[in-house]
Amino acid sequence: MDSQSTIENLISLLRRGDKDAPEALWNRYYARLAQLAQSRLNSRLRKVVDEEDVALSVFDTFCRGIQNGKFPELNGHDSLWPLLMVLTFRKVTKHAAKQAAQKRGAGKVVGEADFGENEEANLLAQAIGNEPSPEFVVEMEEQCNYLLGLLSPELQPVARGKLEGLSNSELSDRLGCSLRTLERRLGLIRRCWQEYPANQ
Image (cartoon, rainbow, N blue to C red):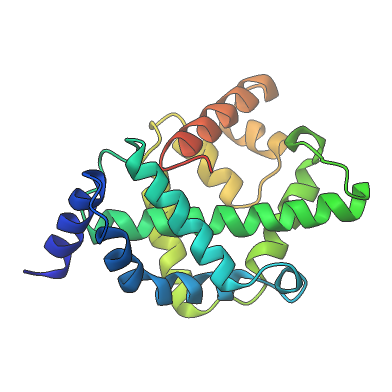
């Protein structure tokens, strides 16, 4: 049985509540998840969380999601690894956002709406670092293509523009639409990417 079929079988067993499936999947993916998380954690974040914490949290989110009927299209390594990557990026980014919020607000919880466009970009930059490895660049390119593939043709140019670092006003000018329309499309993109693969 090849790796793709093995992972597909383990995912199927996990959906059915098999007690050994989580450990088998964990053994296959832990090292890779920890390595990915380690490459994304800067020195400040490592003071509050390490790669093992992130890997454990990602795997817990994944297993709970499967058990709650999420990820119905998941069917093997080719779809599982992109999902685990997305979850890892989100966990690291959330830790960066939480650390920045605590530093700025003395522990007060700061909502997403409180972040300006530039500050949000800075948080992402802190989370993913400044010098990604060639392997990470390849993985990010694959992941970007995967995420863009979830969007309608109308929304893809919006996402591409934001990935290029354009401001909302610059992007609305490029696309020939109003800021209100652009913000509505950005909201649709956020909802799409939150609903699949996960919003955790």
